[in-house]
Length: 202
Image (spheres, rainbow, N blue to C red):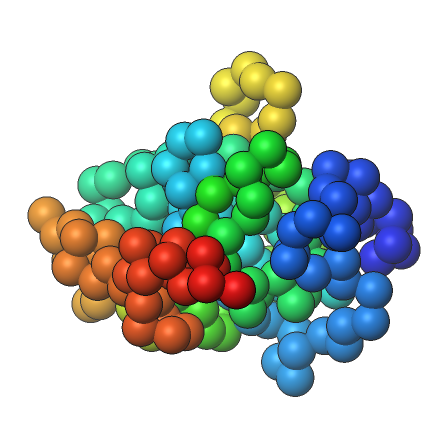
């Protein structure tokens, strides 16, 4: 599927004369082709958007409780529309009344590595893992590091329901709350309140 077709739903939902969100018309893939970003989003309901670069777009999930470094925590992740690559650096406030109105923070970002392989050791592409409903990755972010899995469930809903899980490794932190421990932006060091106030000045 062409990138323009993948972003059709994203663009249809937004009025770019009113929101500062990127339209994503002229964006090249990252140098690695495998960036990830997690954005805290104070929309009508607070959630964290987890995004992975896959085939020229940011495949996205809304995670109501946010990510965790505790392997016992299985966090619901609702798949949403694909976003353009330049959305990875979007931080600011979407006007109230617009789709997703509220403040957005780049809570974490970095590179990811695909861990999913076939029995013969060959890599399963990220696109195929997405289609299969099981993604296994290693995150190298400013806050999140280590192995994670996204597993599609059979739960009914308008949008595909997945689970975001920190898999067991030496970097896992049972009983921890990474959201409380590291609440500020990985990009600017600002709090959600500071981002909101700064947006009011422009």
